Image 1 (tube, one colour):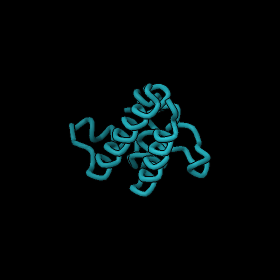
Image 2 (tube, rainbow, N blue to C red; image 1 turned 90 degrees about the vertical axis):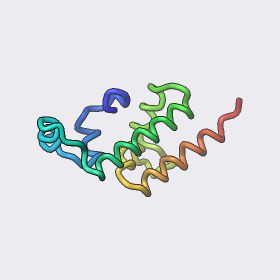
Image 3 (cartoon, rainbow, N blue to C red; image 1 turned 180 degrees about the vertical axis):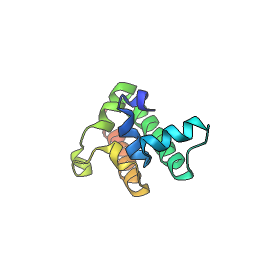
Image 4 (tube, helix red, strand yellow; image 1 turned 135 degrees about the horizontal axis):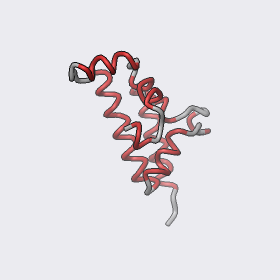
Length: 103
């Protein structure tokens, strides 16, 4: 996911609420992510897929997720995906963008 979003792994781990050391330890014993981290990763994947659908391109979607948005109080959409409420805000903004495009 970090590669798809073209972000440093530590940025993604921060959103997931996992330290670098924890992920290394889990990887060394092939342990799955915690349910909370799995849920957050699923949210990121779902929102990224929606952003790709809205913008029509993975790079454009990734860029939008990494830039502060005035509509989101100048917050970075990716950083809001660590909570349900933040994810709902980002999804609403993407839906508004989707419906405001005129073809």
